[in-house]
Image 1 (cartoon, rainbow, N blue to C red):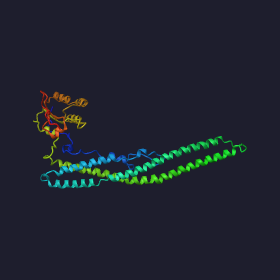
Image 2: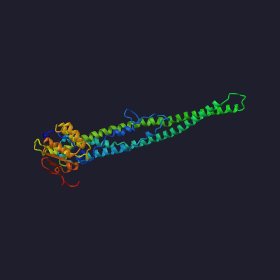
Image 3: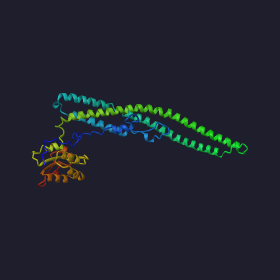
Image 4: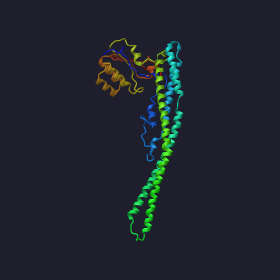
Amino acid sequence: MKSLKDLPSIRQVRLDHMLEITPQPDNTCPLIDPLIYLGQRRSPIYDLDIEYDPKHLLLDEKSLAERIETLEKWASEVIDVYSILDKSIIDNDDIVNMDDYIKDITDRIAWNKMYEVGCSVKTINELIYDWQDKYNYYLRVERELDNAEKEHDQLESEFDNDPEDEGYEDAVAAIADAKTTVENINEKLEDLRDDFNSDVSKPFEKTLNAFTELMESIRSNNDELRHAVVYLRDMVIEYVHNDFNVIQPMDYLKKLETGKADEISLGLIDDSYYTYSFSKLTDYLKKNSVLSEIQIVLLNKTKGIPDLLDALKEIGYTTVRYYDDVKVSTKYPELFNEINLSKELINDNKFKPRI
């Protein structure tokens, strides 16, 4: 048992939620890779050949467009937070840096190339549809060739090479016709391959080269936009204390501690907000030698607050403070749960307002 009051806390609430803005979206790379056919990051594996079925190669950029829209919304909302700040309290150098970030962010949002992506996707998909039609027709002609070759082989196998035979001339003519049919179908297949090369293969490669360059430019722009917004947000956070509660739940509760060894602040325990909220907390307690490895394993199986309180009580803690609702922890931080483990719940949040 020991006090954690003066030890570093863990972040339990996302900064974006504290600023009441759209959460930072996931990276766009996993949505860009499936759209790229060339280079090391390409996802689709294919052969540019008329005998290859391209049905799985069709592109859909909608998920990427939605992710980028969210990315730009998040970026704009960070700028909006900056716009409401009292500039008189901001260091002049920070104002210059933040204004530079805002210009960079604004320029990158304005650069949006999703219209061009949509046009390119339409062109590529049209080529793939044409490819699919040529592939299907090529298969039909191949089946014709197979049947023609079987017919030719059967005629030859049945042919009695005896000029005196009554049907000799008809048989020779039939074999010659069957051979001509096979040759004509082979020529047809060759023509189809040539048509594929000119109508699909060459324009497909040309379009993909340009499209890959476009997608890599979008990847780079998104990465740079994300970095600029993070830098701006982290600077803005330093000056928003008059407008937002940006104190992490654990830090807020630690300020209430007296420093006695039997007090402990757990911060936020809300798996409905963050799936790993409970396990992140228990890892923190393990790292600071509050709980043992065995206790962590058992607690992570139940993920129950009563079980955690029992474990802390056994160690010797008597006063425990925590939140079980993220909205309460950010909007009404004074409405925390305080447990006296030697008595009973002495300050719960049952009177908290409906949110």
